[in-house]
Image (cartoon, rainbow, N blue to C red; front, side):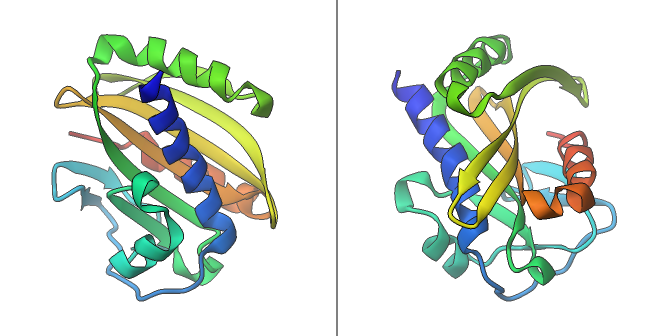
Length: 179
């Protein structure tokens, strides 16, 4: 299914970013809700996260798999990030669990766990797994949801050596997604 391939590619490219990111310019961090995706979505961004500049996005993600926006911990050399992709795929909220189950199957070599969550009144699915990279393992938390009838993929990634320090902050941030 083309939809699964697109979403899988976005997810995998998010993971690949972590092994290659280096410092870029910083942006203001927010203590409260941060506007993302041109202000259409808000999230309480964890301390230390700054918006990834477009030139860094261009270098780190292949064009076909590039998220619309990413935030990262500059002091960690880009090993920790949150990225957002709104796909062209039509997706109703009621279709998200089925799509997530298909993604889980496609990503089965990584033994993903799948859970359903409700965030600000909206039903979402989460895939959680560890994937290999050239620089070590990467912890991935992918949240799938429907926004304005399109698939919204929000991902939190960190290298395994920083998981203990950042994983809870990433989960908390995804749990604050609002639109």
